[in-house]
Image 1 (cartoon, helix red, strand yellow):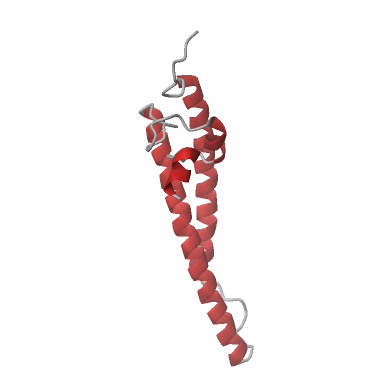
Image 2 (cartoon, rainbow, N blue to C red; image 1 turned 60 degrees about the vertical axis):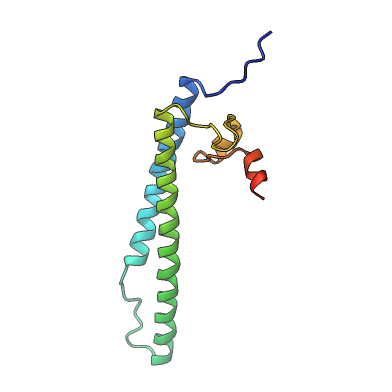
Length: 127
């Protein structure tokens, strides 16, 4: 009876994670494009002929919306970068290994958070 602790995922498991991550990257890039087009949109919403007060509110709202979209875009770019780093770990066959405990991160966690580099155990130690 072997009690050997598995220290990495099999090549087949890594291939499955790679497909999952590539799909997430594709979706994340689509979302990023939408965010960028939203905050770069200088389109006029037809407030030229409305009262100056309403126009001031509208412009303030547009500024807040652009700032929010910019922040979302920055977060999305970081998410994409983290996913791409996960692909590099797959190529290096180090994907799914906790950087604190050096144990394998549970598959269920990686399916939900494919760019995770910490196990739940390590995350709880940080608190």
